[in-house]
Image (tube, rainbow, N blue to C red; front, side, top):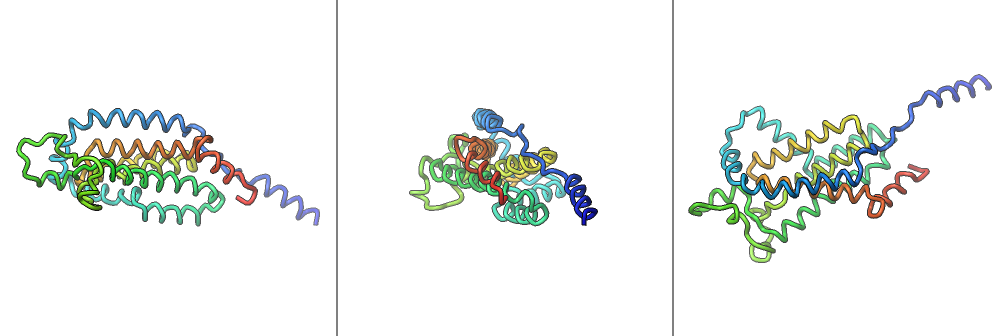
Amino acid sequence: MTAVRQLSVKSSQRAPALPSLDARVSAKWCYLLAVGLLLAAVPALLADLSLARALVGGHLPGDLRRVLTWSEAFAHGLGVALIAVVAVVLDSARRSRWPRVLCMAYGAGLLANVVKLIIGRYRPRHFLTLDIESPAVGDTFAGFAAWLANGLDHTVQSFPSAHTATAFGFAVGLTRVYPRAGWLFLCLATLSAAQRLESGAHFLSDVAAGAAIGLLVAGAAIEPRFLGGWFDRLEAAPDS
């Protein structure tokens, strides 16, 4: 009996401790990046039309286009859910951290969709088919609360990119749980943003604003004064 007890003690001592959350991914870090992206969205307006014309033409190599298409799963609500299910099944020790991760991903996408209803903007693939002589970037905007006149018409819901917001919020959440793969999550979020450009669903400034929203929501889910305090208590609960 004593031998069994000693063996049990040794086994528990050898068991690896659960890695802590990545402290480098702080709310301040998210906020600073978000502000930088919002500022970058302003000059990006100057490149919106020319870049959209180049990408919507479909001149990318087939393999690269397929990679971009597959990366959309990282920014799609269903894809996020499937990844979460797989992660919880394979790594149940970290399941208490997933409510925060999902809040970052889905909360960012939801906020971006709310902004879409306020700021109407044509999607590139639809705008480029309009018969407008010498179009300017200002012509891509359909005014405020365009949904009142057009209903929930997706053709005027380009700004910002909700997919990109979801992807960057998701990337921050995953990086805090799995810090060593942070570079991979950032690459996947960037690829999913590029997919929105290549598909003609969004302009460059839409993507920059979407990424900023994702980082802002992620920061709020980390910041103790906002949602972060509640998630900290949830993750520290004894039964987690």
